[in-house]
Image (cartoon, rainbow, N blue to C red; front, side, top):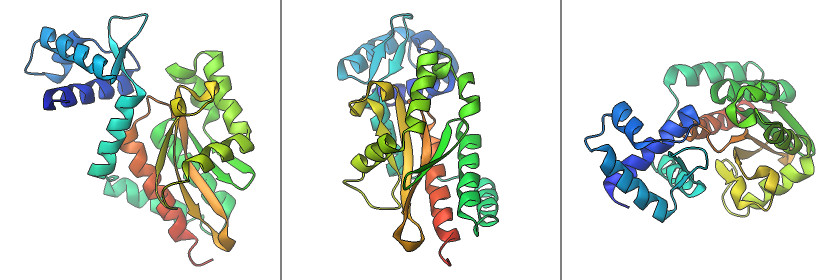
Length: 243
């Protein structure tokens, strides 16, 4: 992939994450002030389609990112290691430390923060128990206005065995304390096809493991949510060190 194609793909992903609508060449030129014509962008889009990074929708002449594109985007985030703003990080730490002596309150506080900052459902899986926050506002998101999408999300949030199976499958590699991204398209589950899980496992007291993260649409703001999950799980871990 050329440098220009990489920049164009980044713009397409950013635009789709922001507006959830297929992206057209003219709009990209106007909004991002790209130093190339819309005709050149269309040609580059054709190449990106051949490479499997974008796809054409049935309802629009624009293009949308594929899972392959999101995976490339996530890899770049891991390399760049973006950080949360100092003021927000400080506020998050204060809120979590204030609830450090009660595991239920601590996890609920973490999930409230995740939901507020991401707009996606915050969840924690501790053994057979699932904590979650934010389901009530999910129908306002474009991806969940259809009953089927909302039902799929609720289905996953209510099935601790399924969620355990999904997370355990991704932990064959990697270490505790490392944030992972699971794309539903990689799983043999139709209900999860358009969704993604961003989470981090960590060890609590008495060797108990908890997974904390968010479940939402593939059109999630990876650039902000990955470092957010990193910060929250690290802070939760630090909060219970003295237990």
